[in-house]
Amino acid sequence: MDRITLQKLGLFAGLYVSIGIPHGFFQKVAPYILRDHGMSLEKIGGWTFLFALPWMLKFIWAPLLDRFFSSKIGRRKSWILPLQALSACVFLALAFWDGSDMSYFLRMVVALNLVGATQDAATDGYAVDLLLPSERGWGNGIQIGGYWTGFMLGGGLLLMLQPHVGWSRIYLFLAGAVFLIMIPVWLRAERPVEIQRQHMGIRAFLKRPFIFRVLLIVVLARCGTGLVSALHVPFLHDLGYSLADVGLITGIIGPCVALLGALVGGFLANPIGRRRSLLYFVAANLLTALALTLLAIQSEPTRFWVITVISLEHFISSMAMVALFSFMMDWCRADQSAGEYTLMDSMGICSAMVCAIIAHFMAQALGYGGHYAISLGVLSVVVVVLVLVYTPSFQERNRALRESSP
Image (cartoon, rainbow, N blue to C red):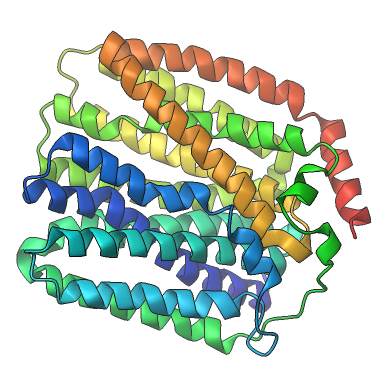
């Protein structure tokens, strides 16, 4: 790996850390603060959905990031730098919150997610622009690894540090971290990209050959995230684990293992190949579903096996995401990479969210063991369909289309 590639990977590691921070904050910290202030579980669920909404709908405004920018600053830097500055300012504003006005806190968290989702779209476009096809395996590994590092900083780690340092110092630390990440982005020169506006927009993307097959692959590959991953917190709660244990397992240990999985997936993606790495890593979710089924049917599973199985899920899902993101990048045109990648990403997020909702209903009706057993069957069908859809000939068409794209 040469010096230029290492510089690119270092740049994106920092950027995706800053994207993971608001994700960890709204998934781990915000629900805890809301519950601590007496908010009902139903209302917390509603606000959590609202916090996640920008991440699901970001494809609507992502094409604007491809069209409008300052050529002096750079196509992606024109968006990334001010968005990072806004994110840091939101954390600064939270540092001066006295804890009394909950509406103020809720507005800040909504703003943080709106800014974070938009920055994610701009950063994804920057990654597609900057990374060569041969660099995308490692690049997507760094993408997932950086995200999980930020997730830990903004989530589980904060819950563990808060009793010792207080919320204000935590918010100041996060603001400073986001500001520091801006420095390498500002210093790196951005190469210009030729813009062909007649080929831009969601309608143009959907008219491309085979694109609905691409979206089907993305949707199917993300099913495992919703069906298998969504129930970790209630599952641990119902096993009798404390809040501190849940934070440690799902907010620290799981993300650390996911970071390792992202690096392993990035290392293996190129030698194995795009198609086989995606199929193999998604199929590995079957092992996770089987392990969770066996865990759920035990009356009192040991702590060791609980942590091992949940860590396995994080490891495998992280590898699958690396392969999927490389696949998505391969289908993006350079002149509208932010809009196209974000549309595919949003489809995947919606798939995971729908499966997560279904998972909660199934677990309520059938118990955790019944849910995970059915998920094992569903994922088996998903793998079969992926093998039938993502054929070697389809992969060759993808390569030919990208080489002939305007």
